[in-house]
Length: 385
Image (cartoon, rainbow, N blue to C red; front, side, top):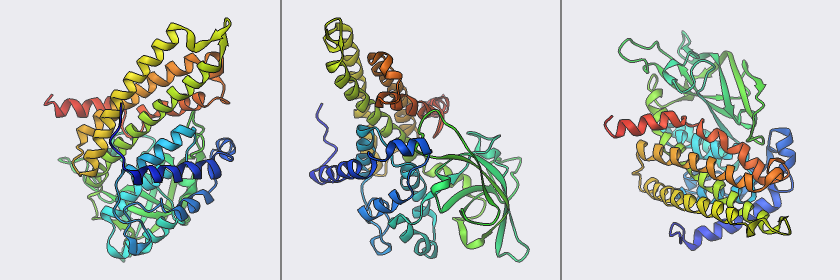
């Protein structure tokens, strides 16, 4: 089915990204997977390419206001090559919008040029060992000093993506107690340099997939955070955290359809070459039917995701829209990639084949950004249930 999402400018951009991946990423990616960390220099190279500063004003070194479609192209090309840019998508697609929306002019001048160049990478620390999706239960505390010049941050976080390759971490912390009427009251967002005294990395968590992106535990012991690093208003952090969730969940849907599409291509290539009982695996009716089912599902998902991208560009993507995209997208990707791995037989379980990496990487998409169960709750509420 013909897509109408892109212009020639997007396709020219795609060609540039495809060339960059072939030259700068593919030769090194297996080592990054073994290291559980991409080379930090890759982000500066992406900065030189001009893709670290989407929506950052041109006077601050960025590209100015741009369509989200450019980030979608990057996602599609990474999936096509079965690689990733580490936590690039988290820094640029999820955390940067917080700075763009909430930072004051002084903060933007201080941080955004470095983000655009790739000298400053971003991560966000919300999840705690006992909170999960219940952000109102955050216990990390940030107490204002007696002289009012800084906050003293104490607590711990877990499942933090990209922290070891980041210079700034947006930390959700409690600056005031919750009230009986509102458990969400009292949360604030602080931008914390990762080289601050008392900012410590805990375990680098050993994940099933997404192995080129580090995921860590963090701890804060009497970390002094200047009041000038408060993002937005004090005690209003919970509302800020919800503001960017639709884009985040759309991005997960984008990743889901991109990886499912790539899985079909990898499976087609394999079954056309692999011989069984004297003929290609592609010659068997079951192979044809399985791939036909996968193609139909992915076409439907692509239409849904493309509509979401257009709504996002128009500023009309709702929380329920994004929940539907994430729920349907990640469930389809899980089914399709599993079927495509099955067509590889035993080789599909070997990491030398990209389908194995896609299989391991996609499982978490039904968990992070809000579980499938949370998405169903959001959709049900939108239905008035």
